[in-house]
Length: 223
Image: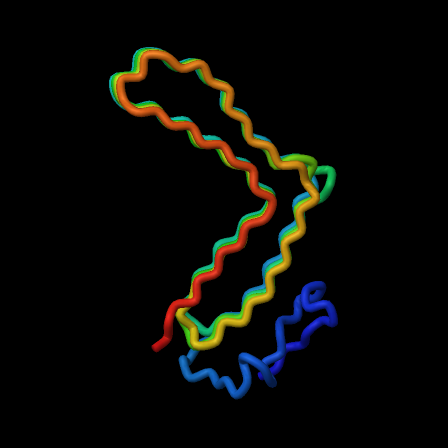
């Protein structure tokens, strides 16, 4: 089997060639193959707002916000060829905001907020996994914000805010795992937490992060 390859390695739906290199002399002995083509385009704003006032809660209180341009999650048990192309245009804004006044909570309080331009996850369990992925984030701002006034919490309190341009994850125990990943981010990412906190009976933590591009690849031993 041979697949066409573009001259730049990324601008075409074609994957890498298996007539030579890492995939040379490969034969499909598993009885199955998955060929996946994913094309996602977001050109307009994706925004989430959560505004709330909470008082007197007998248990826990949890607040979660999220906004994303393009997401794909691929899981197979076959030999797998993946061509992934995700694009967010310059007229789009990707953001999520949480505004909360919280008081008198007998349990714990948790805030989680995330904004993401492009996200791709591939998990396979075959003889061969081949991935050709291109992600472009040109949004004005993947941005998150948490503005909160919190008082009177018997348990713990935690806040987490994260904005990301592109994220790519792949894991496989395939004998052959050729991957080409291109991530382009021209956006201005921002993550903000503004909080007034008092009278917390347990532990307290706040985490804020802004990341342009992130890739994680796990190739398990086949011995």
